Image (cartoon, rainbow, N blue to C red; front, top):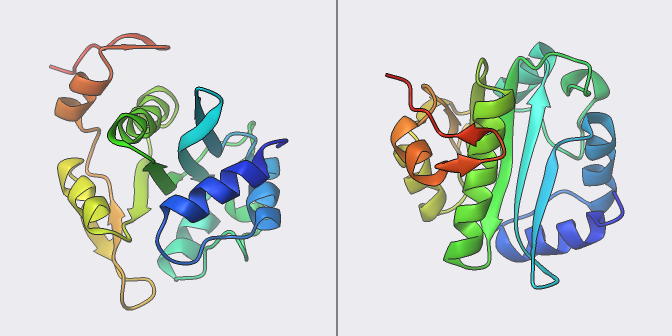
Length: 177
């Protein structure tokens, strides 16, 4: 929580379009205690991943085009003691390829280690983001705002996971046979 402003500055620098305010990001982080992860390299923030565990009400709000940091409600997100119905990958970016790979690795570690039993949703604002959705085997599952697609996971991406997760805090990567 003491680095939310730095997180906001980095996200604003790396993500195209409007992002949530510092206060809105801090409010959601306070509820979840686990949504924001920022990589610090040589003392400087250079990458981040923001993933929000959603309740079923949050999933419903997402599909209805209502979910956002600015209007997020407490009953839409899950705290530490609550079981998530889905995971929303709100943001993933890095200043350089190394930081981008580290951010993707952080998302995959969290997905595999803590959310392997739920679907992951994401929006892609850039050409690179849409390419990443294809590479992770996400599919378009809705157009909540009528314009931009909402992507949903079709399962854990074992091939890219094996490449990025050879050694993790969760131990050796063991691909599913």
